[in-house]
Image (tube, rainbow over all chains, first blue to last red):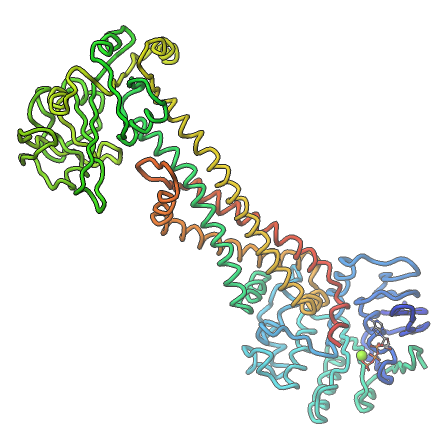
Length: 225
Length: 394
Ligand SMILES: Nc1ncnc2c1ncn2[C@@H]1O[C@H](COP(=O)(O)OP(=O)(O)OP(=O)(O)O)[C@@H](O)[C@H]1O
Ligand SMILES: [Mg+2]
């Protein structure tokens, strides 16, 4: 059985009387340690797809299993609490907009997922390791407002990695960066994938970055091509 | 880092709003502590004042009972007199442990205070009066020896007002003769402080009330049924029986309606605290709608979010009520002055008594009420779905 298996995943948004088919009948399988590139035009359903995969949102229909657990199947849905537990034990997220908390320092933002994980409380060694890996050691005590776009992006990635997830979901991780920074992030993702066997689901417009994917899901109007 | 720190930092983010909310809770607590303190202080002071009378029953000439009550607590006007003979009969009864005869006289003195004031003279029997008022102690000197000596004993405030010390001479109204100040009393916090005491016979003499009395103070024997004895005294013509227990109840029933108002104000203070907290916390939850969604997508369970918001609320409430308690203690003297000014009758002594139980009650109840106000916003926060908030930002 594949690590993540999706079958006929469909997401329909209703906006008034209008129905938007953001995702239609998506079926695919992802193995452990793979890098999946999700591409497509703006509005094609990329964010919708990774949100459903990352257990942040319920699909309208279809089924999804992650690491052998049934997350959705037809009308069967998990409770918010159960979804959260799966989310935090398996996934790390880097959002399209970084969503750093403005009152917390870089260090505190990175530690945030650990606050809510019983048994996984702030491990100082892990923090130092991550700060170093992402070149943020000198920025640890700065507030997000004092950072450059690239530093914010790296802080968001560090936060996604602090709890050692098995899957990293990154929505446009280089969308806000120049080409040099983009290349840095690309190398970092490759390194994480190779050294730690991290499974990566990557949404990107950048063809250069999409190349690192062992599998590419190209979306058009919610349909995988 | 832990959830407390996250909550704490959230409060620091909007310092002004946090401070205003804390100030609101502080004021509510202040009002509550002061009112509760008053509720207790008033009754206790009244009790002490009445205990301080030293008598359980006082006989006066027939008149309005309220007048009689104020006469006794304030040393008032509209004095009536009763003959000694009648009084002696009562004093001699078997139920009576001790009795003392008094003649009160009030004289307007244009030199007292700014607009003049009434000076109250009390003719007493040096054989019996001191024994009934053992708590009267002397700053200087002592009681007079005989009931016709040309001597006075001054209450603490009276001595200050007259600027007299023991050994000085002073003139009394209606008398050519100089009276010698035999002693000055210590402050008692009762109406005795303003009194000028003189021997009964001398008083009857100079105020032209020979053979007449205004009051007879009675203390009963231990096992006597006070109510039954009072019933018996009621049958006497021409005298008014004032039972101190009754006076107290009369005054307490007069202030009972004031108490209802006091308690409703306290209740309103509760509501203000609660809605203040509700409003602030709800606003900060709405404001952080997106952030809370992020926390949830980063692994916060609904209960974690609920807990976080409730911790913020608790911090607000605890700080506010602590500040309110300090404020109430610091300004209790001021509040007391204000209450004294507003009330028709206030006993001597502390009107506001703030004890540990009051403080503890105010602190915990305001904090709890504030927490109750925080529950709804916390539930709202816990129910935020991670995705809605992320979407709303895109
Ligand atoms: N909550 C929602 N309610 C209604 N329609 C939505 C909602 N979220 C997304 N959509 C619609 O679904 C479609 C797919 O949106 P989605 O965000 O997945 O696109 P995307 O590929 O991530 O685009 P972009 O590259 O701009 O981020 C769009 O037409 C969008 O307008
Ligand atoms: Mg998107």
